[in-house]
Image 1: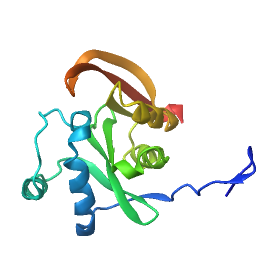
Image 2 (image 1 turned 90 degrees about the vertical axis):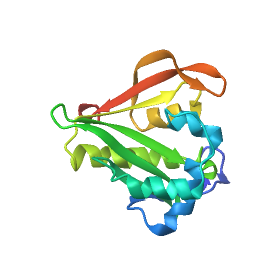
Image 3 (image 1 turned 45 degrees about the horizontal axis):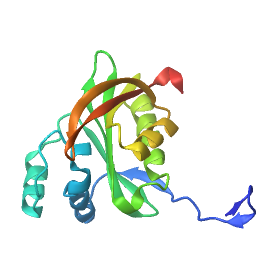
Image 4 (image 1 turned 90 degrees about the horizontal axis):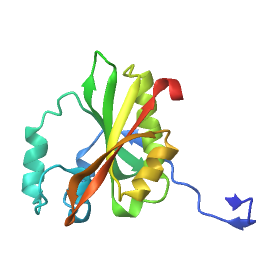
Length: 179
């Protein structure tokens, strides 16, 4: 592809799709779940090493509840996961969460996956609002969320303990009427 601004070739953006998880995806998903560098950004629990056995046992024991989980696939390869969870069927809203392998970050993959899962939530699950929480230092994530249509709705000051210090948690949301 040619960048019109500069007249030089640039890499094609990856083709991003959402799909059901298969056994072939488990190594990638384990790698993301075990990544201590981003643990606090994804989990309310204290960081600790995660063994493959514990990961597999947790997956087997967790029925998923009402969560809708997708594998994020970029150019035919699993690179992460995105889910809708915490459904409020009366108020018609849910929370979204996304996690990507390090090599998939900063390439537009997260934004594309979020756009797709939001569309799924609004058109297939009849949601009217989707929200998320992110730590303030996750600048790349915040940028991806904004590109996907989320707006900042609030901030929980010093709400999360992350890598040795307290961080704000940014609350963001998107309404079906915003699209």
